[in-house]
Length: 435
Image 1 (tube, rainbow, N blue to C red):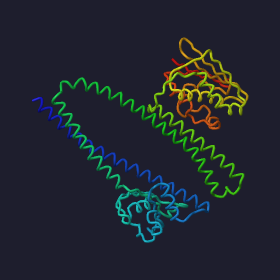
Image 2 (cartoon, rainbow, N blue to C red):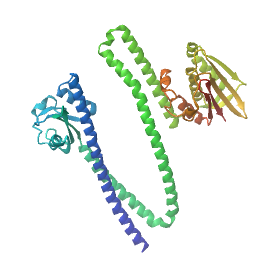
Image 3 (cartoon, rainbow, N blue to C red):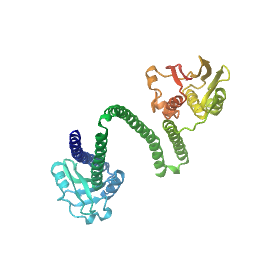
């Protein structure tokens, strides 16, 4: 009796899952298409605005050029249509747009002429593929002068829809059948494990949400940070291509800027890869006894040109020969970032103090500067990725926004603690405490 009831319940669940999956997937696809319509309408309005601005400036280009340029930039099909339905240009047809039939009877065109905007989806008579069309009326001085139509192929969306529906139904069926077999054989034994799984699933979901937020924030920041030097490089290259390269002084100045931005981009990518290696535990196990004094002296030797350029003096104090265990290269990287930061944010002619000593069995290494300092409100977020106390100064001195984040990650590898003491205008002290 219990077995029959269990099978009946599983059957109802199976039916519910199939129906729910089918409905939810189709609703999601419909919502996706609706969002795409809004997106296409936004594109068409931006295009119309650009054309009107060009017309007012006296720089209007041929519609064929507009169609090609905007289509290449957005990855969409673009058509310009006169109010009588004559096609003025089409990105998919190129110069052959003159052979296209009149579009006055197109649903989206009729709607745009009546209400300012319209949309529809159908198979293209010229390309033989199904498209989502959105048309927007271009108005000038209160009158509609033409229609701008933007389109995207939706055959792929339907293929995805069909695949997802089938895959969901099959996976749901397989999952429930497996669950049914397990439930019939081990119903009484599954209660406790299921509760444990539920708790673990909640923990995993919470962790995934947190990780997803961190990932999204990181991607957004990386995109912004990469875009800045790339935009600068692109702008100067275009200026050189437009004729500025003929002037030796301007050419040299622009090439120097491009070199600086390229170096900045290289440093940013290197720092991102360092964090990625540490987070993904792509670390080679090269633990060794690290001589703290020797490692710091090597770093100071490498930084000597910068120290001389800023006339910054460095004083060191080592109570005695101190050793710590760990990856030598990572330790040097940690200390390099701290010392280099101290140099960058020190005033010309300033002084830096580096000390290493043992306190209650723990190794304390501190880097103290007399630079610009950090206000108290910034200290809690100091080790976040891409967090800058002074963005303009950080970029001026060549910072990537990841230096202290790398310090934090490497310190975690050593199971070390980092403390910061700082006062605005008086300098900062960073102390790393190794167990």
